[in-house]
Image (cartoon, rainbow, N blue to C red; front, top):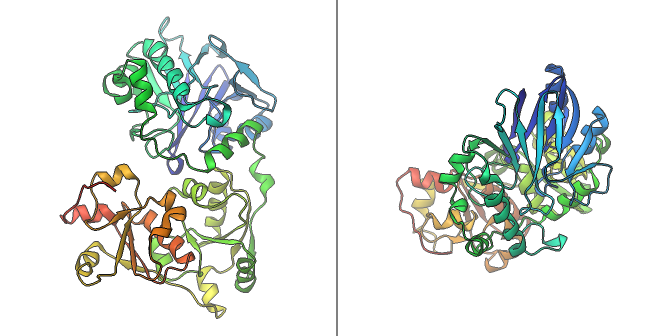
Length: 463
């Protein structure tokens, strides 16, 4: 049997290729599908099935494009409500790839239609080899039950289903069965997902905090308490996947825009999205541009911070980054990427247009200046759980995802220093505050990680 995991770090997303006897299945594909076609071709496999463990909310799937290009059938749980042609499967159904069988286990809880795939390898007769658990069981966590509310189920109802799926089905498997989920650390589909990308049922039975709570009522309470807000793009992406997204090639390539045309488009309401690193952005950028760097989770933060009716114009270091940014934005459903700044920021200044700057402080500079600047507002934009684990004394917690709506508690006239874990999210936050007229914003490079590494004191009070 051929088995390959594809892990996309910027979305913390895992997808899979399984094959035997010249046939293959792709499970939970990302939107750009060339890698699966190429991998199958190298292995001499024909992709026969494209299988979704559920209709994902945190990214747009390429199931329709992959099926159209390969002639494969799309396979979904029978409760999906998908509006495109597909094979609807239920408990016990089997799909065959040569001598390998994929047995469907219905595992609702994260979504109503969630399925897991038990892989039966003839090399070990009578014993399943591995299980693809989608967003039902992660490494170190389980799927959130609150992301299907728009489909008529409460979080408590979904959590009850999740308990039954885990304890009645997945934990009934042998301890040696390998576990391969659809997401890793950083995904908002769970709360404490490990950075590991594979495990076993036995390891999860012993070490996964959520599986230690066996009582159904207690489990429901645990799963529905202190959940972070669902990112705003989740519901939209789930509905895109329910209908099927167009092929990436249909979106077209952003066009190069001379600096003055670029400025005119911004004045008309388009958004400049600068995907360069924080230091480069701070040294000089198009005024009012939003900075979300290619080096991190560009797609998920763009989905959270940029409304979906926005026309996006890119600012990059080179044209290769234009294509990368456009693809990564499309993975979360941002399809109105219509142009990019010809010549970049250098071309902008060469055309006689003024660039804006954002100061960059090291943690040493922040430490030295704190006593000197009584009016300084110090803002930590990490998530509440990160904040509670330790933060710079005197900082207040305003998570980046909520900054747009919560910034009213800050004074735009006072200097504002922003930090996160490393300086990536804080740069996005400073650009957002600058867009809203904050007169002096500072990005703290290295963030709380650098503060901690320098041996500087941390506070652990509540936000």
